[in-house]
Structure formats: structure tokens, C-alpha cells
Length: 560
Image (tube, rainbow, N blue to C red; front, side, top):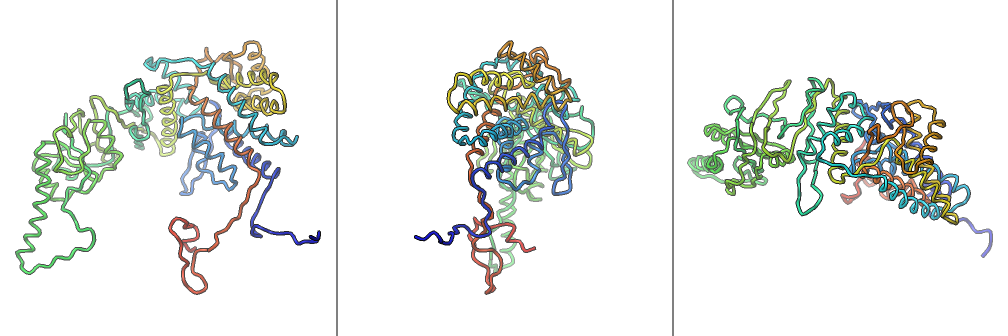
């Protein structure tokens, strides 16, 4: 073999490839860039971000997840960081900003280690040990809370939304969140943790107009619908018997084209009569159970409306499936799939009032005063859409916090005291480690300080002095609850200040941040610019290349 061989190119010439150190440094700088975007939104003195969405609307928020959701990034590592905040939001509903800042800092402290030629696997090993020890420290700092003590619960939820826009309205948001969570809490028995499905059973309804003080949690549900025949059907019924259907109350149409050959004119009349009789039979089967309100997810013909009106039944049609499920949980009705299958036990009698009210230009139906509702609607009123959207985001966070405490009723002190205790503990335990793993292990401890440091930065305190003071406090008394007061920037005891965080949020934040940093550090090759082998669009012969439905590239399928 001669030494003058041509270099072999395996990849396509227009493919971009970053390898080794270059790929790792690229990932670290991308992660740091994402963390820097939302660094100023941490803590009670946080700044708001104004984002213009593609439809020309404005998003005003300091919620980490809401900001990153709107940002369009191209770097794969930055995309991975944005996925983090989504995971955090879905899992625990809070701590989305902290997790990104912490992950960015963990990658930042790994940079000098890589420059010293430490292998990424060694760094990852050190990070894993640090994660295990950090979780033990957090667990030791936690203490239980009585979920039935309303004032304690309000205090916790309030301290978690003190960093949000709505904290200026006092206890309002915390009370709404707590009421909603306690309403949808479903005890499964047998010592299992309760089921709290906020997403499906606690619906936030935003109605512009009115003032923030008018927000309330209904003991039941509401939805944006009116009765089928206004004026002829009742709009207010006390103690209604409610029947829920998900079948159409109209004659069955043919699947596609239906041809009927008629030889006599009477046959046409017989056909129409058969259709009418089918609808009449359905309505009679419903009326036999004497319901006051019939709600269906599908269509309801004028003829069915006529029969129901004659029987004094109010009807609502084309309701969303999710709304129907909520009504079912609120008033104790069962959703019936065919009118032939209705039984007395399917009729819901748990509601105290059915009422249709006009708010602004829209009609809203309320099914309220339920006896034991396991679903609720939260009505938000506010001056403008932007304010309502921000209030909704804050409320969802607050409900997430309340849910976490109900599922795992343990708390840890907030204000960066927990992170500082972890940092202190890891620094002490580094001495017991030998070998190169001690470096990344200690680096995790250093990275943890980013949360108290950012809190001090955001309220304009002297960062170096404040952090030195905080370190000294934790040195004197390991495991103490001293942290940064996010309003004044002073070192304060969080127990006296009453700033708490749910243990579930804290452990999830640390786990997600360290694990994502490990994943990004293990990437040593980025290949981009891989193109489709067969471009969509007419080929030279004029034929469109066949494409299996799964691999459709939406940008290429639509001609400019």
C-alpha cells in the first residue's frame, strides 16, 4: 500500500460533521446560551420576557417553559435543553427555570475538566455519584406536612408562586389552585396515593372582562354552549336529572352514496316516515327516564329537538368529549352510547343547578352546586387576553405544586438553601474520594451554587459578599435552612421566612439537570445536513415520486 492514496470520503460532501472536542464544546456553549436566555426569570424579582408568536400575538411571561416553548432553535443540544423544561413541566409543573439554569451550569463546569483531557465517561461517573449523594442530602433536609391544614398548604403554594406575576393579588391564586386540586382528588383506597388528574378534570375557562377578584372555582363545570332551541327550552333548572350521550339524535345517514329506487310516490312518503319514526323512537326512549337535560357529543336534528321540547327537556349538542367526561364526574352521570341501553343508574342527579348565562356576547352553560364533584371548572376573569394567559400559566403551576404536595406531602426549604446545603455536603465528601472522579464530583457541588447566586443577581445584591456569607452559615451549621431572600437579597433563615418547596419538585430538578448534562457530555460526534435521498416534487419525467405516508416532509410537499 502506498502512502499517496486518495482520502476516502464516506459521507456526502455537503454533510457537516463535528467530532470530538469541537462537538462537546459546541454542545456546552449551546446549553449555556439557552440557560442565559431565562437566567433573569428566576426568583421573585424576576424580569418578564416579551415574545412575538408566529400569529402576531404577544406572549408576556416569566415562566421558563412558556418562554422556551416559543423559541425556535436549530442547534440539536439546545433543542434537547428545551425538552428538559417540557419534561419538568409535565412531571411536576414547577421548577422549569431552575432545571435549565442548573443543567447549563453543570455543562459549564465540565468545560475545564474536558480541557484537562479528562475523559467524558469519567466526568459522567463522577456526576452519577454526586447525584446519588445530592438526593440523600435533600431527603435528609425534608420534613412532612399535614395536607389537611389549609393555612400551611396555602403558605407552600404561595411561596412557590411568589416568583410569578399573580403573587400581587395575594392569596387568590393559591386558594383557587388548592380548591381545584382538592375537588379533583380521587381516593383510590388500599393505601394507594390519590389520583389527581388536573389536565382532564380541572378545566381553566378564560373570559375577558371583569376583574381578577371575580376568578373562582365552580363546584361543578361550565362550557361555552347554549341550548339547541333557545326560547323554547328551559335555561334554568334546579336539581336537574342529566343524561349524557355520545350518539347522534338524528336518523342514520348512509356511509357514502346511498341509492334508493322508488317506483311509487307512497314509498317516498314511507321512507320519510321511517326516518321520523326512528328519531321519535330514540326520543321516546330518552323521555321515558324523565331527564331535565340531555347533552350529546354528536348532532341533534330539528325533529328530535321538537320532541324533546314537547317533553320539557333542555338539550345541548356537539359538546367536546373532554367536557362530557367532566360533567360525568361532576354530577355522577354515566355517558351512554346508544339510547336503547339507557338505565336509571345512568342519569346524573348530583348537580344542584343547570343554568345558561350570557356573559358578554357568548352564552355559557353552568352545571354547578354539585354534591361531591370530582371535576371542576376554574373561571378566570381579567382585563385583557395577555393577562388572562399569564394568570392561567401561573394557576397551572400552582395546581402542579398543590398536586405534588398531596401526592408526596414532604417539603424542603427554598430560596437556594437546599442547593447550598448540597454544595457544602459534596465539597466535604470530596476529600473521601480518591482518583480523578473527585474532580467532576466537586464540580457538581460548585454548579449547585448557581441557584442562590442567580437569586442574588436578580435582586441586585452584592453577589460575592452574599454568597460568601451564605457559605459561612452553611459551614457553621451543616444542613441549616439559610438561603437568599429573593426580595431583598439578604441571607435569611427560610424556616422563619416560610419559603418552602415540595420535595418532588426539588428531586426532579436535580435528577433531570444532572442526567441531561451527562447525556450531552457523552456526545462526541454531530452529523448534520443529511438530505432526503428522493426529493419530493415532480421529477424530470413529470411523475411525482412515490412516498410512503410516514416519511412526508411537510416543507417539501407544499410548493412555495
